[in-house]
Length: 132
Image (cartoon, rainbow, N blue to C red; front, side):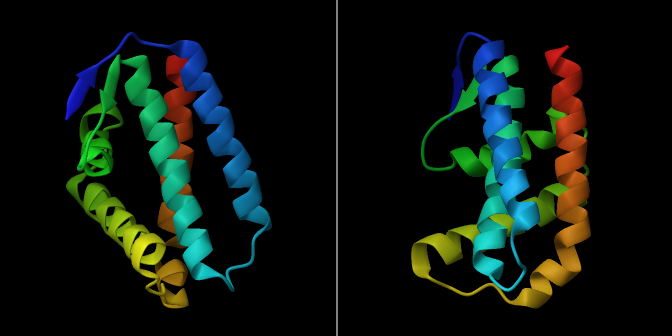
């Protein structure tokens, strides 16, 4: 559910720093642990997206909030329907991994690592532009 909040630049910066720290950790991680890598990719994307929304005075809360955050990227960062679809799949894989202990096959990361890295780069650029 969409919840209107006061735009908070400092909180957005703090969330962004957390995402950057997670990205540093991810770059030092081995792909031998695909579940942990997938979970971190997802969290980075979610955190940067949440910071972008916060700058607009928007926060999603409730059961479908993470899905809504990803869906909002079509408007706030000009993501295509393909991009949104891949990110929703990432969200689902992360949920299965985190909540059900399902294993993510290493081939998923081999196939999508470049896409996920470029998605993070795109989100970082959009957020940095908004924080100026």
